[in-house]
Image (cartoon, rainbow over all chains, first blue to last red; front, top):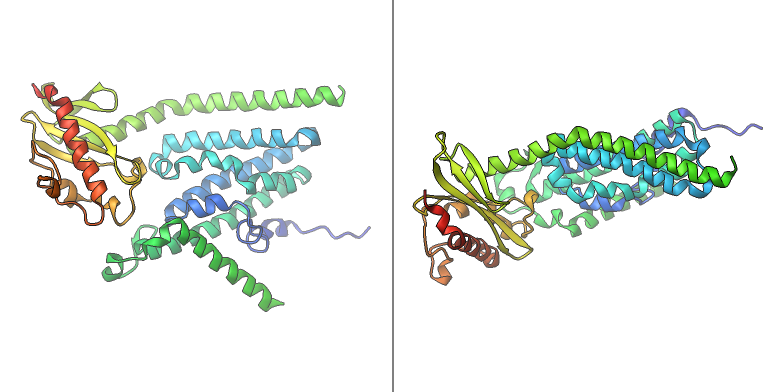
Length: 204
Length: 178
């Protein structure tokens, strides 16, 4: 029996680039497309989703021995939605301006495929610490993509990044507004996906 | 315990723990959330009726009296919303006791405005709201016989604001008595 066990570090890193949940596995696209109209909103969304993803991974891994396979999905969903409701209340109480922007997308974290996907594919049959690393890695991958998309869309549509002016006044008087509309999001994720495929093909 | 019973019991335990945790978080954040809502409303009211120190809600979410330090009425604030291009366009109007508009605020997208960015969304800009200040009657767009310049390319939104204001004033004018 010489099956090589994947290293701890790889649990952390695969989610960031190699198996980036949104760009490679193409799951969790709804929040990716809908909340990346500005860098700040994208960061807020990824922070909320990361909180839920890491904690649900840890808790599910902690109690995995007691969960029967036939009822695992309802239990996952209860655990995930509990964390989502907690972050929903916390944002309303302490970050009301961010809450008003994210609005309906906070409750929708419950059905973010990344979170249920990691619970099912990883946390349900790995240890607590490994699940934590996996959750952290996937959160970083998700955050990375959202912030990149948010920054690019904000740059083209408003001429700013994180609210900071980075373009000359002539550009801001007639910016590429369509980038903050849904077509801009599809357009951008298409370009990013094409870049990733190109990089992969070049590597062979 | 056989597996069938355990199935039920484990679900029950999960729900109980989740329920208690949520009740606790709800109780912790509730006063804070309510305070945030009051703060947000008060700051918006203060922007359209600067002469008032405090506000008294008369009709829920649509009419407030502005009071000065000694508690006398200095004006009223009305919220109204007419249909625009993408949905209702909520406006807050501050009136002094002579019935003149002293402040106007069109809700931001974060507060529920769904107009088109670059066109109807310009209704939130200062120059548009300033056109209403000082008026007391005949509040309408220029093409409808009034004095308000419509936003170019966004007549429907501009009209929703003007009609919302006009409607608000005629509906609540009896509240203007001191």
